[in-house]
Image 1 (spheres, rainbow, N blue to C red):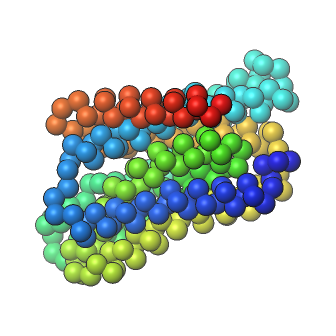
Image 2: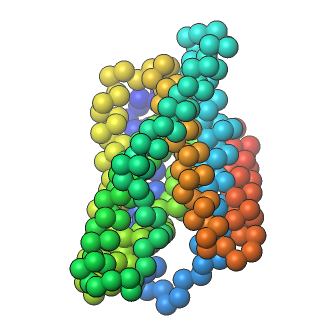
Length: 263
């Protein structure tokens, strides 16, 4: 099949790696910026959340439905796509309960150096755990349709920036080492392409309409949960006006425009 070609594989891996690298950008903001702009952060997070919700419900969910429709009647296909969607929600809920993501919630000055350093390590572990399914989602979406995959990667890249901040702040303030702060974010960022490769290695022998349908349904559910549980609430905490709703609508519009232009 076309989506198993070597060129598509390398493109999907490159897109996944590029989205992951934005985590490192977060650490650079911590090291080189004097004063972060909370309103811009709120807008960016909401933009990412809106883009994720839109692409999940308008494009990715219907890829799951189409995959199931190739094997079943339309009603059964829709039921299976819906079940896959909520299975994705449940999976991310389980990950979140097992290791809550301290996304953009860690600040210096709330304890001694060892306490702050420990928070940084916990942040890195939690964000790494969340990055694994994100990497697989970006990789498989790009493998199937580069336009959808790149759009999803852009949304993930935006929300990865404050995750890099969450890791770098406590590591930097506890150790005084810019190098260690950057290395910590690099290691966390690697979870996305690594997660993509591990997931692909497991799924590759079984890839076909049914597997893609299940995976895309779960991706759609997981991305919507991520946006509603993490991105939009965090954006609201940083907002000082209507940045959250403006960012969300702008993110949706940007994804809509990209899908319309490249259909």
